[in-house]
Length: 100
Image (spheres, rainbow, N blue to C red):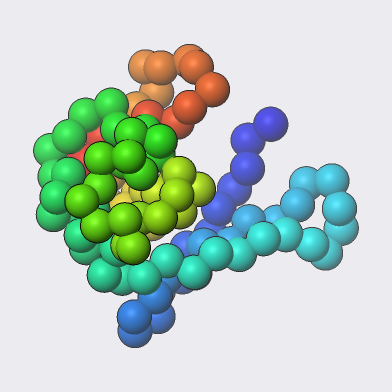
């Protein structure tokens, strides 16, 4: 089941929101620091086939990219701002991204 994510930008953070498809009037939101997004954008620019798990283990700043879930939210923000695209060639359980 595909989920729709909404990304909102504040001064120092991005808000990543998703609404539940099964429960009415409920969902999740995550805060992602703009510093973390910029770090990933610069450090992984031009990378192809990047997954959240790979990003979480390869980041040189674990306090900015603390877990695979946090890395996935950073990748969602990068897609929203046009700095990354989802790579549709892969059909496994992980989402793959290409950074610009």
